[in-house]
Structures are given as structure tokens and as C-alpha cells.
Image 1 (cartoon, rainbow over the protein chains, first blue to last red):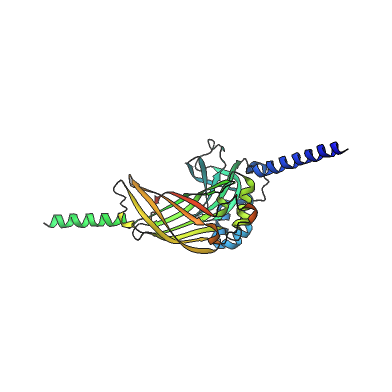
Image 2: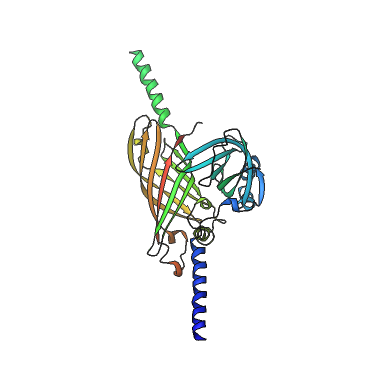
Length: 136
Length: 184
């Protein structure tokens, strides 16, 4: 009886340890696996942040959002690609920092795209990170 | 005689237009490193913004806390929710000056080593900081690098006893910027 208990508790310990280890070392999940909480036009998002940043933060910050807009710039630097979407204002755009490995070969300036990403706030542009391209 | 005065005036105007420039970046890179006995942590942000006025040396940085990326999901979560409370304090900012801004000359290739002095605000707490920076001018473009060490406790960031050997008391911050000229 004792032997079974010892083996059982050891197995439970192993399972608990491997679950914790897995959870601890879990990499940041791809946005591909996350459900979008809302959808918005880039121009509308920039408008919202420009008019009332606090209110826009409450509405968008840390949420998974599908943002749609026209590409005005594509930036490739140090392994990170960023798509800039027209925010309706020369100085303010929606910057979408793409997930590493996301292919931007099929898109070019002027294209209307749908980008799923996480809103991190507003500096000169509204910044989204962990972005992927969606079909719609 | 008249011609040379005219030439000097043109050159003076040309010179001042270079120095009256503001440069900026929207893709500044800020990384921080915590080196503790049990764990090494690093996070990177590629969306920092900075505006630098070359005529006065005044420099302002802003960075979104939620845009720092970590390798481990749990770390990113703890960083945002527990340590930085980034929903309450979404940005960290720096307002200060490049001390030797007058040595920066966009028309010549070269390096300028300078002190940077200013106020750093993290999690709603502002502290004066000082660092060394190296600015390089090459082909009319300006890039800058700087390193700063801060004590996390100075900014109200509390490290629980349980993870004291996992998170360093002092964190090294590395800043890199490729500036563009602001066309006004």
C-alpha cells in the first residue's frame, strides 16, 4: 500500500512540476490563436485617441482588435516589420508591428488590409503589436 | 568685396538651417536587461518615439509599456499587471537635454559623445537621471545610442520577496535611435 502511495505521489509531483514548467516557459501566444474582441477602421481609432486619449485607452488598450485601413508605409528594420495604416491625418497613423515570421510579400503601399493585433496605446501613432494579416 | 559678404550671409543662413532642425523617430529601440542570480530577463520595444531639437538640445522620449515584448508569456503578463500596472500607467517618458548638442553637425560625418540629463517618469514617478550617449552623423543622418541603469524601487516598482533572486534591483536600459529630419 505504501509503495503505491509513494509512486502515486511521485507521479502527481511530476505532473504538477511539468505543468508548472510548461506554464512558466510558455512563449507569448500568436495572435493567430486569439479571438478579436472588436473591429475598427484605422481612421476611427486615430480619431478616438486624438479626441480623448483616456477614453480611447479604456476602449482599446490591451484588446485584440482587427483594424482595417490603407497601407501608407511598410518598414522593415532589425527583424521587425511594421505596417503603417492611414489614420486620416498626415502625422498620425496606426503602426502595426507584425509578429516575427509574418510575410508581407503580398501587400504593398495603397492596399487596404485587415490586421489583427493588440493595441498598446498612443504616442505619435496608435501602436499595435503582435500583428498578423487577416483576410477580412 | 560685396560678393564675399553676400557669400558669407548665404553660408550663415545655410549653417543655421542645419542647426535649427528638429529630428525625430517613431521606431526608437529600447531594451532593458535584468540580471539576477536565478534568472536573466530581457524585453524589447521597437516603437519608442523621440523628438530632438538640435538647436537647443532638448529631447523628449515616450514609450508604451505594453509594447515591450518578452520571450515568456508569464513574464510579460507579470511585468504589465503586477510590476508596471501598465493599464494605469501606459507610458514611460523622458524629458531632458543633450548637453553637447552644439557639437552635432549633420553636414559632417562623425561621432559626438555627450551627457544626457533629464527627468525620467515611470509608473507615475519622476526622477532625475543622467547618462552618456554617443551620437553619430553619417551622410546627413543622425543615430544615437545610450545606456542607463535605474533602480526599480526608485519608481515604485516593488519586487516581492519570493522573486527577489529572479529580478534584479537595478535594470540596465539600452536606447537606440535612427533619427529622421522633421519637415516643418
